[in-house]
Amino acid sequence: MAVRNVLFLCTGNSARSILAEALLNYRGRGRYRGFSAGSHPKGEVHPLALETLHRHHVPVESPRSKDWSEFAQPGSPVMDVVVTVCDNAAGEVCPVWPGQPITAHWGIADPAAATGTDEDRRRAFIKAFRELDTRIQLFASLRIENLDRLEIKREVDQIGETAGDPVAPTD
Image (cartoon, rainbow, N blue to C red; front, side, top):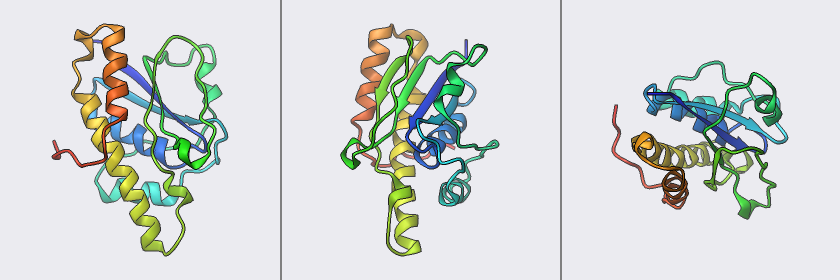
């Protein structure tokens, strides 16, 4: 079975898309490989994103805030699925991915934009983590190899409408 490449796109590539990349690489159990990028990358991964991943024992392999154009270069991994995780309600501009991958939008509020106390900001990261983890567990459980392109698109879109209620841990 071929490993499926999934690119998570966001504006800053410092929080949500980084969380999603790490979660898919962890939950995908070798069936999926996650990547992340941003349309206007911050240039650094938000420390609370890393703290949240470590707190939940999700391994992180050299996280880096990068521009989405890196994945449009010759020799780049071919993406099977591209998921934007921007929150349209926050007025962000979500990047558009050219080409033929299946695309979906999973709007997640930007925890990096959270204000308040350190604990308030940590709660925002945990909320984003849980919402992404729920969706990624559902995605990773799909038998994508048994679905046609339209069925995959429908399933991935439906996952994007899933609330952030935690799925029972599978580890």
